[in-house]
Length: 124
Length: 352
Image 1 (cartoon, chains in turn red, purple):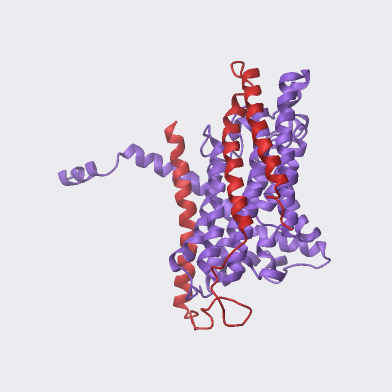
Image 2: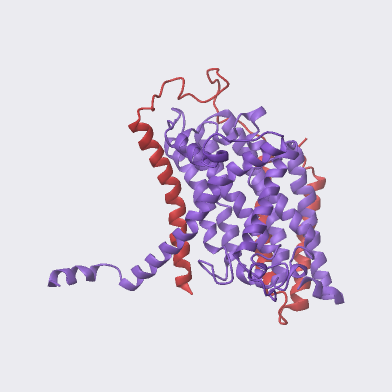
């Protein structure tokens, strides 16, 4: 079984190396052909032609943070649902598994309704 | 053979392992090269198709009917200067495109092309897909952060919030597929749909098919969900500071992800390599085979391009509303609905 995972490991390595290699080639060729002509204006952050003002690491809307937190809750829920969904059709799980997951889902849906009514999902 | 060579060989890894590794590498390359060609030609197809949809011709200068356009583009991009802004975090800036590209390629290791043509036939296939493809968002958020540019930063926030939101809808939609198929193995999921058009999960799970595919479009930041790179407001989004090959890697990763979403959708809802006429067909071209998978994938990819030519861009609040207030409740409802059908009514067979 474990040898099934070797090609995956190789594939992951190939995937990351492919990206790295492309960038390396790009760097080498642009160096060789002397197209690399950096200048202070070119190397400054793009701001529609103006000199940049203030820090780019600025304050951002708290709702992005909220989305990230809500994502974790629901993603964990999915992680619980995955194994449940696979064994659902087996006799030993059956009704008991179904009812317990429905209770679990019900609790999470109450939480979901709560955050909805609290306006956590509003983006106006 | 002199003694000392044998002595050296002892230090090398076990030859069996090396052998296995080499075979794996050959197989990987056999999947990787067609994939890269497809990724290179998808933008060309996009420009052509959208061109004709807008009554233009599209690229037609490089080679016959523009067929060499991707090669010319690649050559151009590889010769361009790679700009690394002075204020950026240099290492993260270079790392970001690699982190976007790696997962987009790595996921292909578990995709079954036919019943036998599969690189790694693992039990946790779908889990692997879900886990690895969600790493891609790091590339975007790191790019936005490392650029130290306002546009890039704003876009990274938008893109990551959007991607994680739609990942939930995708995850829940996958749960319904698992409930029907009872396996995480992608090959077995496809085999559970054998027996012609009517057995595909497209029919019993139709709303989930829609949710999964539309979420896939949003997940890859494609139009009409491309506020993350909306040209008219935040220029190019998280890759505004990227140039030359670093940009190209982001670009290729996006197209690799598009092909991936289309392939996964056809595997899980459209029966993968299964023929719509059932396996019994005598004519070989109508029987099961990889050509069906390619056909279904191309068909779905066409929709990606079609959407882009047809729909105006969504506003950001509309995107979040669709993800959280429409898709999420719908998918949860469908899971409960499927469970109730399977356990409390006699119509559970519809979902097997």
